[in-house]
Length: 293
Ligand code: PPS
Image (cartoon, rainbow, N blue to C red; front, side, top):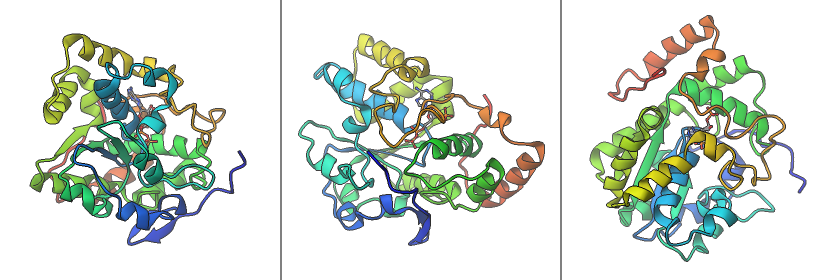
């Protein structure tokens, strides 16, 4: 299908966005949550797909094994705010789901989450990833995703990231906004990509205990095995290859899956500037990230 030219960024209530995430705003904001919904939130490129696959396996690999081989992950875990002409909107996809729980992907900053999720006290999982690996991953994603603004060259992209001029706004605001919210909401689990890489089994246990799930040892092993980067990368139902807006000739969606790839992109100068800016923007938080393991 022919896609229109790439969208441009604009300021949307103080957050940089594109029309593909704001055109359906009224329906997004009035979205009706169901009590058993699970909301999986992240700034782009933090590991949302990884955790969504883990959740889908935990909930459905025993009850609906066929779904793993026949339905692409982005249809099993719809993206709440997406609305691209010619494709079903995330809201419509979610409203047509009859199985439960619904696992809902979103990149919304905390102030934009539809009210109904708070009223229903839905379980919310937030995944965060260190800023340097996030911006590198985002750069390559924007190169290959025809529904994202033109990324330009790496150094201007990095500059825009520091200024918060990315789709879904400032990384610094996003991770801190949800971190602060978590302090007053027991229904938010805050996961770090680096922790997941370091010890997937440990983080899986945290996830299960938060969701009040007690998977068998076999299921836990299966989830860990299937959700390994090397296995997901070759799984057509989970590696993004079924998504028509992604151009795999430019870059794979499952690209490196590592902590520290930023070192292959940042110059010494860029790193110094980035660190200086980072300290200012993260001065007042007790949220800390690891950029190497
Ligand atoms: S998106 O498009 O915003 O939803 O992207 P998201 O899924 O949040 O993040 C994509 C990055 O996560 C990596 N990834 C993984 N890393 C380790 N293990 C597994 N199983 C895994 N699955 C996805 C993916 O490769 C992207 O990171 P980069 O650094 O680009 O490789």
